[in-house]
Length: 365
Length: 73
Image (cartoon, rainbow over all chains, first blue to last red; front, side, top):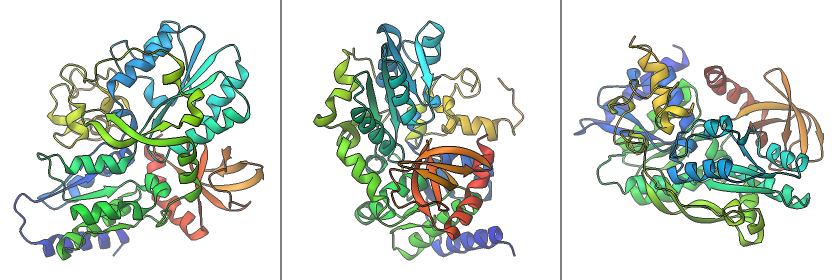
């Protein structure tokens, strides 16, 4: 028997041990890369009936509050001599002032970078421009931003700043459990966020809410192993934080945590659909205030709502599946996305469109 | 966006390393993995090494991530 069938057997065994549970079992993955891997592998079809996987707020672009998207477009369009440096995923997110791609077509300078230090290098090369780096992402990505800010200080770059929307996954998981209308029996925890935080970071959550928190990697075997482990914990009534993904250490990456703490302080943050969550984001410390775009530039505030008809907010909080949204694959497609979940390659809607919609042989964009 | 891939360090110059990543040469920042040495495997996210992998872990992680990298082309 190959490894995958052994894992599937174990999963089935654990499922039987659970016995009859009214309403079945609902697990949430809180990592966009998991969302994509689950759809790509067609893993939902391998699960026993009654075991459901729902997607959570695991895609950094998707959880970014709409007002931030609009403020970024404002910075790009309205200020003179400004260059926006951003990860590629942000460029096509629609907003009240249009997307950054549209801003670029209208003459704004929007440059895609694949590493934070490329934004610093851009500022060094172009002393005549104010370079603003759009710092989005979870714990995996925030240490790189912190290093970039320290690098800009070392190099004395007065024309570099970051517009931060960094988010922390753990406080969001806590907020999700507080939603009375969404049932979450266990979490499949993000592999690469956990490389930074360590798997022990989930221990308080597992203990307080009595929910299994299992860190898994990204292939079919890893995800099914993680799910089988969650079911085993549920069957034994022993929820715990564990990792089945080899690169994840109990305590995480101490140096990365240190760098993050040097540059950032934990602050309340606004999430799409979840609203303000206490201590769920990162802001630059006072000592690095000069690199904060939000303090350097005067920014208007924008409304925090999804585009009309768009259910991205419900999708990332587990309230509906992408296919439940009336716009899915009709008005909203990867080519002409209405909401961020269809824009980002890690968005649930994009994953469903790519792997399920096409298979169903429906009309394509 | 939390995509990360394993790579082998070929040379180190200060806080930067040249790695071989799926057969391609690439530069990564090693400030978050000060213990990394030439010959080590690291997991690379958005241009930064985020952890050092043992050879065994690297082998397992390569397998685990192969599908992911192929799937995100």
